[in-house]
Image (cartoon, rainbow, N blue to C red; front, side, top):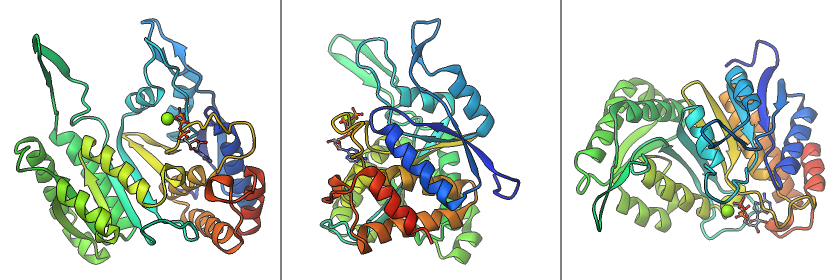
Length: 344
Ligand code: ATP
Ligand code: MG
């Protein structure tokens, strides 16, 4: 999508708990910048389909199919039998095959590591999470790690294009080939083939490619997170390492994410609904704002993305206006207003 053909329609799923409050903060910030986006709010409260399975309302599907781009707050998945995770439902409905998490230290937020800037790109549809498990005989179960060339190639394609466009320094493909010869072998071959395909563009942009085993990544990333730049991983490794990276920058609360699909994308914060502080104007909207930054890059509006990112740093670091989770006493609305003042 280009930002030049008039305002871009975006499906807004405010979500549950603190979702509506942090979504409101995002809308106010975008409104103050006069960003050329029009948000279409939809309610993701689960409904039962004819098979007695929970699913999301038709209005959500209809809106997403039209706009192709969604911004989503945290969703509460009701516990109990028959309830499928709504996030899983969304992933399947919109073919969200890649999960992207930029983990970048927020200047002013003290963490053990200082300056971290790692992006994890995770295959999101197969691998160890293909959901293919069964009992062979009593006491023996089998779980299938499914790796396909097509799924590996599409996530690779996204990763290499992303790294080139975002002018990243290095792509690290993560594997455990010594024990997973065929499956990780195929995954890595797809990464290698894609690296070859984009060789010229990578050289021009200064992006390098390497392959490192999972155990080495685990060791090195906690010794020195600067050792890595963009990590591309199969599903399970990606699930674990992406949370590790969030921890490196001070937890899930500041981490945005993007779910890239075959015909669209959904951007969301990584944190949950925070029921303990919901409705009290205490939530930190930063993760959803950073998800919006990702969304703005996705729809080719990088100048708006950069403006939000700079304003966040100014507000937290220079003005020291922080929500309670970052050791401050600003309400969500106060933080938002301070941030809006910093947009110019
Ligand atoms: P869910 O069941 O939706 O996952 P949860 O309580 O298990 O909710 P989180 O919502 O991630 O998990 O919350 C964990 C803790 O972090 C809570 O104490 C919550 O208040 C806090 N928290 C999470 N997100 C934010 C935020 N955006 N701003 C401030 N505090 C937050
Ligand atoms: Mg939780």
